[in-house]
Length: 112
Image 1: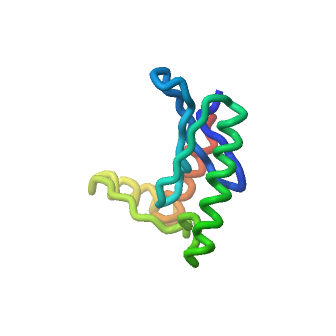
Image 2 (image 1 turned 90 degrees about the vertical axis):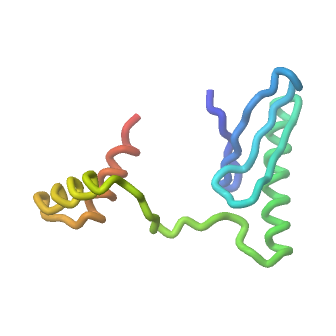
């Protein structure tokens, strides 16, 4: 069972509160905090989709992009020794450090 839902390329986390006897979640991978809740699975799906639609509409009214953009550039902070080892590995492979990191991420994400 997955703890996420998808709609219009948005991902929502899903949790259950036994104490409140309800499902709740939030839109993931965005800068804003958008939450939803429900007492049934059907209601959860509907409320999640409504939250996405309302979020997109609100962003349009505010004149801004609705979701954080992933540009393919990010900084990674690693220990200097690991940096050195990675650079040495890239040199021995005849590729750039950037190519080594890309290859390593692809390999890791391809694992089941």
